[in-house]
Image (tube, rainbow, N blue to C red; front, top):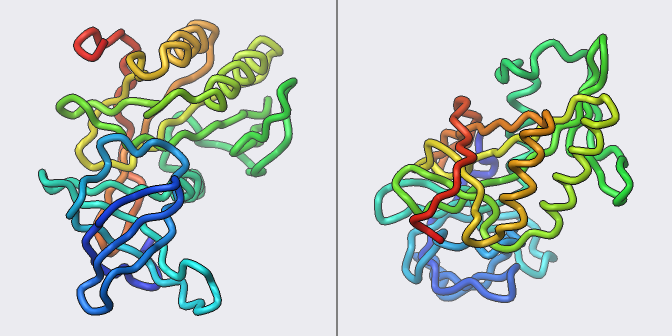
Length: 241
């Protein structure tokens, strides 16, 4: 997908209160913009980073601009807008780009399910049985080429794993897909050093038959699009313990 309207460059001053960031745009002086990311954004930014933001063109909005991308010192791009993850997966599903999920005859989104009052990101309809697909955005890189999820303790993520395991035990197909919005990541691991409970649940889910996938993205200041499938490594990373 192309960024429409085109993104505007700026320099980051700080990110705070989860949803806010201060930037220094080239011509307008200091400005506060919206940060569409509820996570810790660990390793995603430092003061002075070059970022890209999108203008809502709505002067009535309290924070008119939305932060979309960061360029790292190594030249990698990070998509910090977590809402993009589902849009990217939807694009890949529509184009039948995910081999494990080809052949669906319909897609429903945000369907209520489970005993813990969850909503599935995608309910894919197949001729034989439905497939429940949960999507998570990965942006944390702490080792060369390795991405980790979550970037902080995620009770919501733990809940979704329990729900997927329950679906699988009930005879449904259940899939977790990590959408990697960091061009420097080539494989994904559970972040045991940040949320050991999530890592334990992820391995239990895989053992129970929940399918665990990861998909890269291509990111530039002009566009962001689905890339290719990358490995999910469930081993414990003792270097970060």
